[in-house]
Length: 221
Image (cartoon, rainbow, N blue to C red):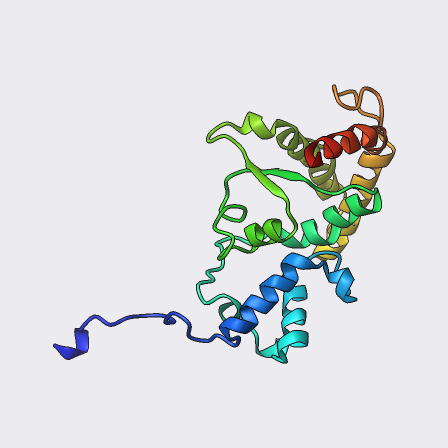
């Protein structure tokens, strides 16, 4: 009977931690008070790699020994890949180049976007960068209608055409062609929607900077 007696499974609470409570408080305080660039780190914003480098610098713990469970014992990876790389490496740096910041982001309710900040990378990333998270209504894709329409456009005008014309040998080759198409879509092609009104998306963004600054001033006043 002992061989089938139920036992606790998996990692126990606190097991695998590399930092003391005091060290964790120090790291959290630094993240809240400063940006990576203020610490002369090669990261525009706080992400997993930046936090691991900070821990190695402040606590003397080699980053090669750190794991998600070592940083947060309750960490459970989401079922699908996180959208962090494109957000951190492309989206936020792009707005920074334009002299703007991201105040709010709208997503659907997928598990790659939603969860508790203490156990979900995407939510933690938004909290660290002070970005408000708005979610679409349940069973109401119209809330994110512009994005849904863009998915249809990119399917019809790029993917369906590209796969008929060319055999791709690697994902990098496909990505290069996609980047070229997106650059033309944003910078050269005029749009007739209610927001662009005959302008390119990039020109629409530039023309809207004054309204964006007015809104930020109102929010901060």
